Length: 155
View (spheres, rainbow, N blue to C red):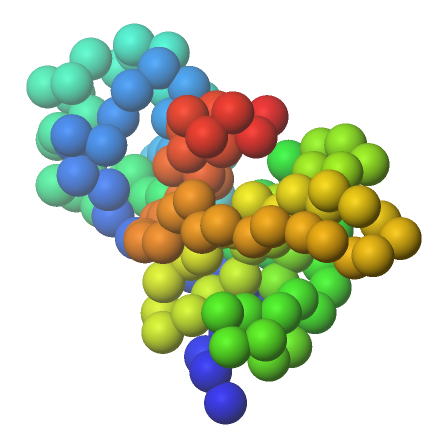
């Protein structure tokens, strides 16, 4: 049984190099946290503020975090949760995204890495289709998935 990493709702401390315009991160509201007696976080897209030297300090103080890729993040791009065939044709938890009536994409996890396949149906009656792996690797967060989907011309 393979590990299902879609269900993680955990966070990591990002490196300053990960920040770019639109990068989603969470920042600790120190004042509000002190008032309510527990950590209060706000999710923001990076827009150039705070400046990198301030961000570096906030990261060092563990006042910035990023959520690992989670199932809702994948679904936000139009993927639907289902069971999909992996490279050995075993059904595994995954997601599908229909781009057209003859083209769809499948996303699943294999050996701890995300796999995205492009699936084209040439003849629905005969079931003639073509499947190609277009990505196999690590996707840490929603911002990375967004960038990848754009680079692959999926969205």
